[in-house]
Length: 252
Image (cartoon, rainbow, N blue to C red; front, side):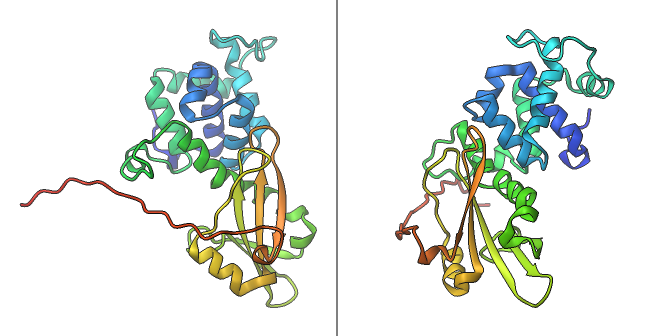
């Protein structure tokens, strides 16, 4: 059995996500922190660089094999490559399987529990992190070519460079570039925040800085675009937050 996420293909990850949701049903859904299957399909689908419909289809593929209230694709045999995945991973218990699904998007329960904002990590934290992170970012990557403001630009993912925005869009005709910071919301409305660096870069780049907000992962994601967001309809207020980290030390 392969439990190394780096050695599992993207399609296999999507199949495993569908298998997990089919086998453990509402219990597995809650453990991942989602309120509904639609939300799980949207978030996991985009987070894995695919489509929400793919996760749903794989869940439906396995539904006839498990005692859940859905019929799934019961009028035909389960596809052989899905059966192969099932046979390899069918012995995983709920917690181990859940940890495997989370690892596909770089989440480590052990590491995340070391620092908690309020000292009480809850099940929905994983879903929230995906919505505000990978799911929203991959949504942007999927729709960027079709957005008129960005269509003549080549995209570079800068999320790991710490430059104060998630994507750099370079012009195909000159040296101009746009900076795009992506945020995600579970619902159609909600609060967003900028880090000090993001705020500073937005103030420096003005019209070359875009805030791209993906809304409504709960039902059907859509986006809104804010150019020069510090000089527009959004009202940002400065907030100060202190995070307490607890550790135990010993002298050697």
